[in-house]
Amino acid sequence: MNIALIGIGMVAETHINAIQSSSHGLRLCGVLGRDAAKTAQFAAIHQTLAFPSIDAIALDLSIDMVIIATPPDARLEAVQKLASAGKPILLEKPIERTLNAAREIVEICDKATVPLGVVFQQRMRAASIVLKEALASNRLGTIVSVEIRVPWWRDQAYYDEQGRGTYARDGGGVMISQAIHTLDLVHWLLGPIITVQAMMRRTALHHLEAEDWTGALLEFDCGAVGTLMATTAAFPGGAETIALQGTKGAALLGEGILTLTDLNGETEVFGASATTGGGADPMGFTHAWHQSVIEDFADAIAQGRPPLIPAREALLTHAVIDAMERASKNGQRTEVN
Image (tube, rainbow, N blue to C red):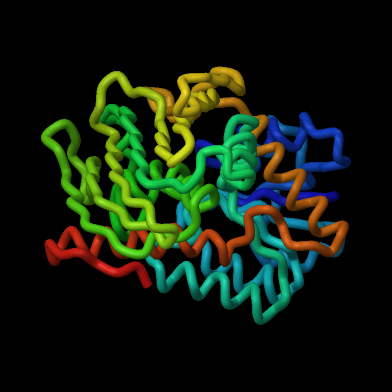
């Protein structure tokens, strides 16, 4: 499976390591960045081709799929041209900066019947899969409450990069850039969130346009209620956690480890500890989870099936973030739509 990579920023190395470590016949055939000189240098380091343009990728018949790892403000033109050329696309999160823009991206690929996936790699972690299976088997009973915490840290240098933490480039702050992963995982585990109450604020620890702290109350379609706290202003940064309380037992998922506790006190532990980039180093995590997402997307293309993380499913998470933003402004309980 021949792959082109668009975007040579922070997460590009993770994708390249994932491709090169795979035994699924994946091959990096070229890269494209915004700056031609930097692209040529990056390509030389990784012994691959420097594409001159999106058109060159779209017209290259040898390219089987394209990974787009640009900031979300640089997606639309690429998706339009690649979809028109029939190229399957795997997007880094988020899909786009706003819910409407994300929906437009998904519609473009739907109309072109082009596969579109999103890199929500936390679904691929072993402990996440065990929890999904435990919920499916009703081991925890009916889930009644949920507690989501993303206590991350970013120093000011992170936000000093041009455009980072702005609505024009990123679409927002901690929710759309960091906590979106944990929110997607909760959606995958429990189903849709239907109403929110939220407060999204910028703390005195950072200078950025958007929020670096969010608190929210959540109501799920399954009947559960929950809380969310997400921030990049919690020094030195800790693991994100999801705590579930059911009528038969409880679950705590954090840092790659799942603890299941029955109401009689019996406990089982699954998984292995692994960081997810919650501290000062945003890339302090393994490439193995990205590798699983890329391999699944490539296999889905070859087998003619949907990927495990289709973009239309990812719109659920975008819709919740949109509802949080509206709720934070109006101070009211807000429906997700």
